[in-house]
Length: 149
Image (cartoon, rainbow, N blue to C red; front, side, top):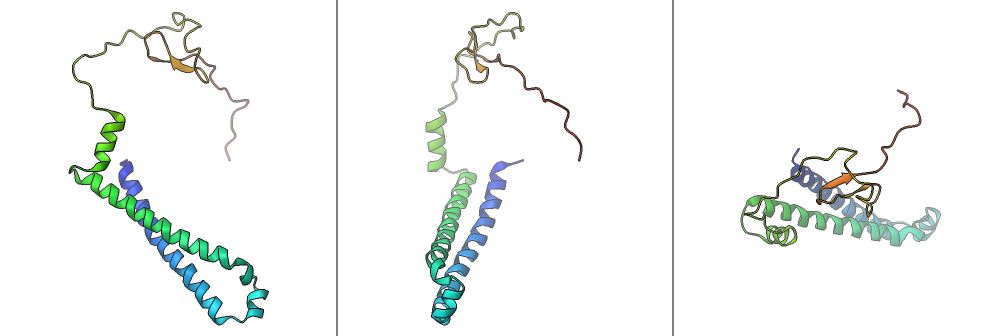
């Protein structure tokens, strides 16, 4: 599955939905404020919900604009040309090292792994003496078998 295509599709759907809903909320607020009498606004609690309706409409439109930025970023990333996103990724992740290849040692058996390895770990995950990932925790076991519904 290509995650960029999925994010792109959801961003396009979000642009449409949030823009339409934001515009709908703002227009409905304007129409209710202009056409309803004050007694009807009080009876329907519109007088108390005015700020929330306007804020929700504005936030919907702002989120649609943010999703437009996300789709434009994904389109520029997919174009294959020089762009800032690729430059930032190279800066954060670094360039691939060429030259020395790290040789991996043989995997250790459970008896050969010392008890002090991965002592600075969380839930038993950590590094061993040769800087390889290790797991020294207990495996989770369910209390009983799950039943089929």
